[in-house]
Amino acid sequence: MTDGTLDASPGEIASGPPGDGHADRPLPGGRTDTYRHPPLVRINHWLNVTAIVILLMSGANILLAHPHLYWGVRSTFADPWLSIPAIPNWLLIPQGRNLAEARTWHFFFAWVFVINGLIYLAYGFVSKRFGRRLWPTSDELKGTWASVKEHARFHFPKDEEARNYNVIQKLTYVSIILVILPMMLITGLSMSPGFNAVGGFLLDIMGGRQSARTLHFISAGLIVGFIVIHVFLVVWTGFVNNMRAMITGWFVLEPSDHTKGDGA
Ligand code: HEM
Image (cartoon, rainbow, N blue to C red; front, side, top):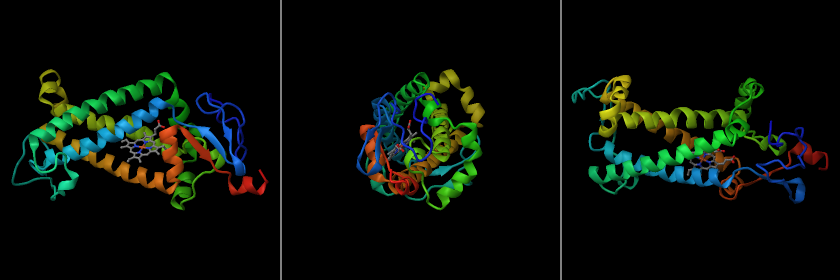
């Protein structure tokens, strides 16, 4: 690895300049404050959360204008693939059914999401952050099953092993960034009348407008699934520490029982 974060062996806290050019800060009790997220990533993340929440809530309002999904080119009203049950009013933007206003919110925040996402992607590639922080190595991939079993027992890494994302986190973040979010964007774009005028081929690839609408709904569902698990893990693995990392950039590495035993 290139950023010096992995120079220490497991159980030993590195004393060099590890996190994105910031040296570790030793804390009492063998704990270490390490720098994890640069300002751009933090601003990007919270803007993305805002945009996605508004997109989901305004999208729900749009969906309620015709709460049935189909495959193919046309809606066969008699035979939907899926009918959406009532969605509580507090989950809608704006409050109360209003297709025109919901579309205004949806399209505005779609642009916020796209521009923000492009900045994050450009930064991730140019700074090589993706390679250093998010892309799993082949050794890590070999340990995926072991990591799944550890997670299933709710054992999460500590000290040096917690310095970087574990393989499950890496795979989840990479899939959401490179597969699910682009899928939501492309299926959404394919339905836009403006885009159809120049790129109608997208609708053909999706198998028609109704299929595109259904695929857009499925990607939104996958994102909701991701958010539920993501937020659950943020809370479970140390809400204050994780949130502090995504707000200030600094993350505390707790010593493992093994390290404590060494008197470190
Ligand atoms: C209220 C909702 C959310 C909360 C509280 C939350 C919280 C967090 C926190 C605390 C981290 C840092 C974890 C760590 O340092 O170990 C993180 C990272 C991340 N989150 Fe979220 N998140 C939320 C929603 C989302 C959404 C909607 C997405 C995208 C669909 C998302 C994508 C990511 C990604 C990709 C990372 C890794 C970023 C990187 O290191 O470059 N999060 N989140």
